[in-house]
Image 1: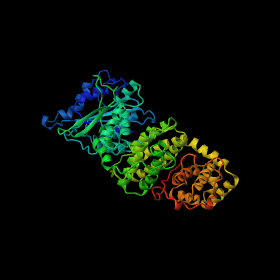
Image 2: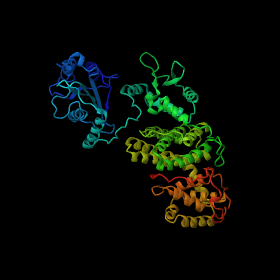
Image 3: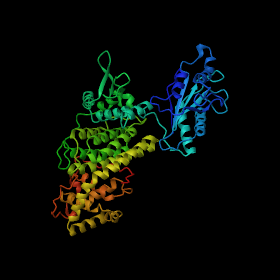
Image 4: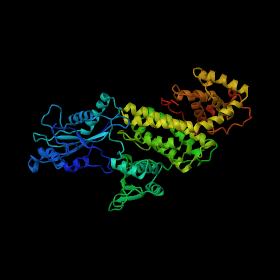
Length: 577
């Protein structure tokens, strides 16, 4: 149940005219009262003798009784209460009781207070009501409406529990503004899947992903065809911006512009500048993990996997302000990955980025700068170009999604610990989309690795089985029973052939990251070992008929550190793939 306190107004009749009218797109059906301050209040919707003017005059009576100098300039209070899409249709009696509880909880008409404000609840659709009230009590005093929005939210949570409705999370004021009913109906009329506001928010979010300057940001906005208006001070300094879709017009045929701050709190120009001010030109894209070209899509995904791996430990154990910055930057990485993904993963990755947008903001103010590596990863993804989803591109995408799944799950747990219910739920939804995207991305490269593992000689497989049982005795039998064991066996063989100590790699992969909730431990270990050992994400590194070295005789992994030269933080729990 979603209550929303609207801006106060000064025209009681104007609001009643809207509530009892047909609506902007004739969406209002059978407008009528379900409750009011007086059971004998006239209902222009059901009583042919009653008029909207009569109801308006009765509502305004306490206001008009005051001397003109004492009347509040904005005396009309308006609250809408909407059921969740999955909730059952409530009766008029139930909506009437909900209205009475809302006016009592918000201070409009406290229970057992006969001198409360006059109000009326109008229902003109199955899923919501509107409550109109005038802000002068019967005794001539003003109502106490401090935190009326917060109190309406708290009452909504109680109503949900008592009526068996979908339990929603209370907002904290950091969410992007919801599309209005008029915007939703306009989108339906135009055949859009989403409203113009939502399309613009995604476009602006993607434009700012990895951008380092205002010039680059505005160039990206123009490149995707958005109309841009900049607001400048007399000195010529840029103060803000607005954007519009070329085909989104008002009744006069003019483009409908939205300021960045109206799209989302972190898309205002000052908040975007915070990201740029923390960037450093010293970050480069020259890390050439695996065999990929430095600027290739696969190389960018390798770097993304590494940045996400490090970020998991920071989110779980770091300072709150730094963790908040990493979580915000995670949203940029998801946007960039969705923008450059192959067709078979694009939809799920786009939905993951869309869901995580809510999780990227909270009242914990992010200290930017620490998140440079993640923002650089987003930039690398954008400049690396789109992946085709096969070979090294597909395998490195699966690796990146695997690491991002754990990072997003860590973000969900961080928000949950802070009591950020909406953000935690949003991050959990994003993780589900990432899980689906991973399954699409990983099936082909893991299948190739599986076939490579099946072709390994029996002595090699036997040695690796012994190695696994000695190194991971508590997990060995589970791994050996999984189909992914052969893909892991191929990876162990490749790591050994490259001069690594597979036992050390396996131990490190398990010690530094949680595995207990993974559906396929072998799948997860494949990507951890390949990333840690600087192996190509796909199976190109091991010849089909090559006999590899005995893993027990190769040099320890300590002799070959990764380019970062560091150990990584602990794994966030919650892998349910």
